[in-house]
Length: 303
Image 1: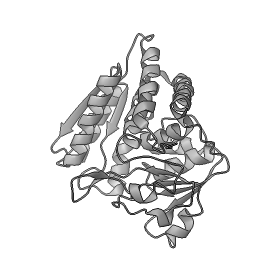
Image 2 (image 1 turned 90 degrees about the vertical axis):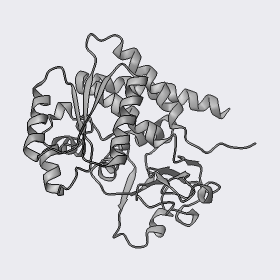
Image 3 (image 1 turned 120 degrees about the horizontal axis):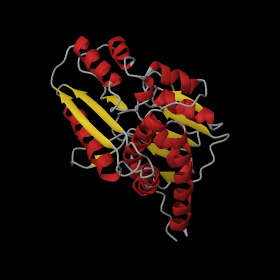
Image 4 (image 1 turned 180 degrees about the vertical axis):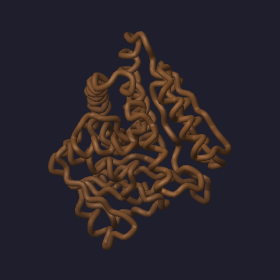
């Protein structure tokens, strides 16, 4: 019997979108989100358009991509404040990184977003709430990873999780989510020594290094679960991840392919955050119901 080890984020997100739409159909007001991108970052612009297409296609959410070629910090802050004050706008997000900005400037601008409209979960208030176990809007990629693992009925309690990223967008919030699930997260980064010795001791490895096919079988212990956040085009034009998929496949128990797993779940969680920015913690129950249905789908597919 051939066992399919691929984690399918497209199938899981389809179940979750269906549950979210059932919820939104009962509401008098629908979320309206503005996604701001700035500058000439082609990849960032493409990602913004993809978010808009996926969310408007799969949900009832009004998702608007705004691209600005140039804007001063002061004008950007004024624009964010106008969106904060606009009661018709329920969510705001800012495509990162901002062009030619220091981390300090970027943080200052992010923190101008109303915490209740912060659908990316990137304000300092949202980060503090997550770290202190309060209900808040959570960055979409970590939330998508947690949701994928739950949907595949993976018990996280007691698991060692190597997180190869220390950013505010992925690594740090994911570590908080793993702690919330009683796992033991280990954050690794560019200065980490003996990385392979660390990852080989872990039950789950989350690769978000932005290094093409860097993680090979030598980094993975038998039966581990591998979550690949990286997306690259190799010299042949094929989409690959931070993990050498073919090299590690026989060694793992489950793995996300570079297409159709983490990416779709990130956008799906943005849709849930967009609903939560308007309707608050009751959306958590909608997500939990969706996860229960996704678990059933995974079990049926595995028979």
